[in-house]
Image 1 (cartoon, rainbow, N blue to C red):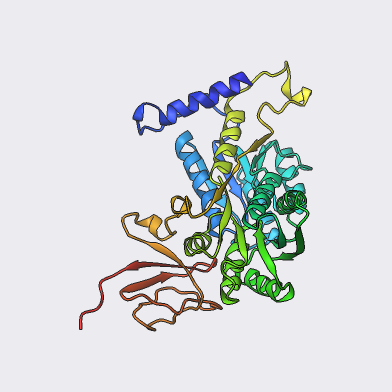
Image 2 (cartoon, rainbow, N blue to C red):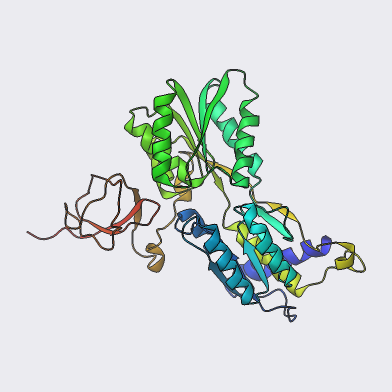
Length: 395
């Protein structure tokens, strides 16, 4: 273990020490496998997974290796399995996999049986042959959300929870909420609803909760889509401040609603850290033998940490501005003053003082407000409008 820690320290010094920007590898030893590390996930349309891509990119740059991110934009496990099959065929040095469902276990085992180590991130597959898991301690994330909710409600009131049904990591977060709120006799969980990781469906579910449970005091969300949906429903019902919302993650809409005071807090993860450390584990296994025993393989010793908890942070009005991401478009030109606005009604091309470029055709909600001198540039699938100021047209 001391040797592994030494490697981590050496890596940190090589990459970030002495103020140098030079990229350095902490091992020049030839790896057992090619230095290609691939993450396979789903739901890449959610801005949450931009942090996964960032972590992979930064790990590749720091180690001087090739990294890649693959997988479907929606929640499609068949497509994700196909992406994993294609990744295995490339014979990488290791795979980073988001373990959404147990149905992925067999394909992870197939990769390991082919000699490709797998580290799961974000959501674990503990029954698979994966070598390690790097991600949020999900029970603790839910427990933190539950304790924050109890604080906001003075330890009394009816609470509803929003999740994506059937996802193991989210079930752990729901249990964390239950365990936290069970400590308070005057608090009651009245219902748990399914968002299907879709902001529109989440808004519909939240609206139904508000109608079904008069006196609802709080809505707790354990995945990224729920917070924005709950905020939309609470705002439309005229219950801002009356119903407290504890969201999950740091989506642009959630941060905007925290600024507005519609969402009181969100439980954010250190998401980019997950794939970053996963690649570091895979690279270490590829290049360094740590002799825990005389024969690690026969002794059943992995030679690396098997679980790394990346922790959570409570985001509220005191610190939300530090979590604002640059938009995906802005990433191509960081000098532009881009902002992300939540959408409640889509403006058609030419409507109002905007010029529409590449907007999604099927928009169900959008903003009726169009500030003067705005160019509408893109509408990604997670319902954020990205815009930048432009000069107002001359009369």
